[in-house]
Every structure is written in structure tokens, then in C-alpha cells.
Length: 123
Length: 123
DNA sequence: TCCTTGATTCGATATCTGTCAAACTACGGG
DNA sequence: CCCGTAGTTTGACAGATATCGAATCAAGGA
Image (cartoon, rainbow over the protein chains, first blue to last red):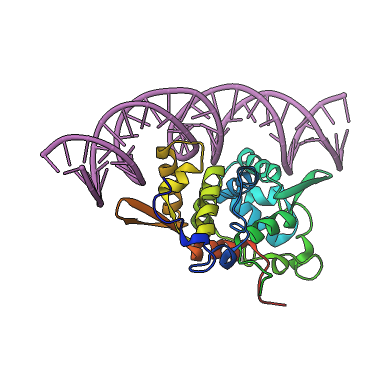
């Protein structure tokens, strides 16, 4: 087991990796963090949901009726996808009179970007 | 349809949204882009895969045997998840002698970070 | 050549997921 | 109070997925 050499004997000197990349590996995710983040990525892992979120973010606030009109799937299906996005913490909904409006939770998007993106600090 | 007012009549002035956020909404994803990105997010949408990627990124290069040892699932299952990550373009594999090593494709991670993160340029 | 170890593929299975039509809930207007 | 429109929930179902054990492939010794 552990095959060969312990991979760069610390990893920092030679290839350097964690600090070259992102919070994803600095430090590596433990099982708990993975289980916390995975459902959020999973929610983005459907073309309809990804585009729904994109439209919501782009417009700031969108009525469900407008979203339904923008896709080739049924209203119940849109409703289902919106629920998934909501339960992943990616959007919020609010009823105003007859209509329901959705907004994006930027905080959640920021968390993901920070996880994946090159560490902003650290020069 | 289109319910009420056209939502901030352009969106830029008042609430401003797209430019405040990320490439996700600037411009909004079309159906094709959504179908291109969704599988990558889907690959990240499993706790085991997310942690696999995290470990690979953190160490720069990892032998499968080390990855198998880090999880409570069987070797075939790890192999399956690595295949999903590979087909999503998130990792690359290379055989050296008896062992197979995986590396992360930083380019793909960068694409996702750019999509989700606050637009780097523009103030 | 045979055997051992590392890794992937195959086959099976239980569960999850995306989708729709139908039923139901929520509002607002006659 | 009844009706129509907007959204969600329910029930059903085909297809995808995560997982395992067994079989298979790959490489390096004895």
C-alpha cells in the first residue's frame, strides 16, 4: 500500500498544488464537508436547473410564470427543479399576490466560487 | 404572461444583478452551454467524487491505491467515480508501471470558478 | 510460465431522478 | 360564493446511478 514514495514528500516544494489552486484542497475536504457541498453541486448538475439559476441571477428577480415560459418542460417540472435549487440554498422564493418570485442566494454562489477558484488572497 | 412589470426594466440600474455576480448570468446561459456545464457539476455532485478530486488537487498526483485506502467504499466503486471525473474533464490519469496516477485538470476547475465567481475584471 | 498485486470492467440490484398528467392549494375578481 | 389563473404537490414510470462481488486485464517478479 501507499505504493511508492509519499508523493513529493510533503508536496509543497516540488509540484506545489494546494496553494496553487483553491480552497478545495487547502486543506483537502473531509467527509463531512464533502457531504455538505456535494448536494449543492448536484443541484447545479442538471441543464434545466443550471439555466434556471442563470436566468434568476441575471434578472435579479423572476416570476415563475416567466421561467416556465422559457423552457420546453412542464410547469410541474419547473416547480420541481426550483424546489431542488431552493433546498440546496441556491435560491429563495417569495409570494407576492398571485405570483411567486425567485431570487438567487449570492452567498451560496460565492461559497462555491471560493471553493473552486484560485485562492484570492495569498498574492 | 410575463405577469407584471418587466422586472427592473433592464435590471442594470436599480438592483443590478448580472454584472454584480458572475459569468453565470453575463449573459445568461443558453440551452447549449447549460448542457455543456451541467455534467461537470454533476460529477462534483457526489461526496465521494468531490473528496476524491479534493485529494487529487491537494497532492498534485495520487496513486489509485492511496485513494482507495482513503475511503470506505470498494476499489471498483472508486474506479467508477474516477472514471466519471475523467469523463467530465476534471482529472487525467496516467499509468506508470504497476500503478495508475491521477492529476487534476486545473483548466476545468478554473472554468467553473470563472462561471460562478464574481467577475474578476470590471471594478 | 505462473503467481501476486494493482486497477478496471462486468453483471446485478436497490435506490434515486427527471418528467408528465392530474389533483390540489393560493389569490384575486366578478 | 364561484370561477379562472398561478404554482405546488401527488402518483406513476422510464431511465440513470451508486454500490458490490466476481471476473478480467496489466505489470512485475519467482
